[in-house]
Length: 198
Ligand code: HEC
Ligand code: HEC
Image (cartoon, rainbow, N blue to C red):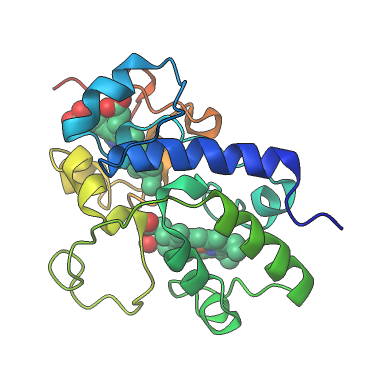
């Protein structure tokens, strides 16, 4: 079996090109005509990168990892973080839940996540600072500095205090087009609150 189907290689290249741009590295053959992302380089974060936010295209991943929460965009965590999440031990104690998989599914999903992961180190908010007493030490998208920066003005009563949301991990509770990789403000609708105007 070919371990690198063309589609994965392309996705990998695209993700890589963008992530490398974010990390201020030159990418000579970048013919991406998305000027906004290019110009935004100085202050650009993963959360402004359309590639990083692209929805998952692997059916197994979407099915197995999209039942309790949305199947997160693989480009929002670096490969080491996905690898940590995908060990059998971690899956058995998955943020307080049991998300164990057969070895076959675990391998398929791990490979997919690794190939489509972010190409940058995500800076994490030190655990304890905002997440005091959390039982799990697994990495979180929602504990990254980039995520916090985007979401720091949203009061807790609309999130953890909101039974229709529960936590920031439920991206699609507020981002109505998250499944399509669209997090644009115009599609934000916080349950019980409505659109977001800042
Ligand atoms: C049995 C339910 C369940 C399944 C299946 C499941 N998860 Fe989770 N996952 C959770 C819970 C619960 C949380 C914590 C959510 C919270 O804090 O509100 C979580 C959190 C996460 C987070 C951190 C989200 C954040 O806050 O940044 C990631 C990443 C994640 N899961 C990935 C996966 C992957 C990959 C799979 C498939 C292998 C998977 N999940 C399958 C229940 C599940
Ligand atoms: C409680 C509702 C809520 C949840 C849950 C939530 N977000 Fe957001 N998100 C917002 C709001 C509101 C903004 C706009 C913040 C602002 O402009 O000050 C935002 C902004 C963003 C942006 C920037 C959009 C842009 O065009 O500037 C991205 C990307 C994003 N969120 C991704 C995520 C991801 C990924 C998750 C899940 C891991 C998530 N969000 C969970 C409410 C939420």
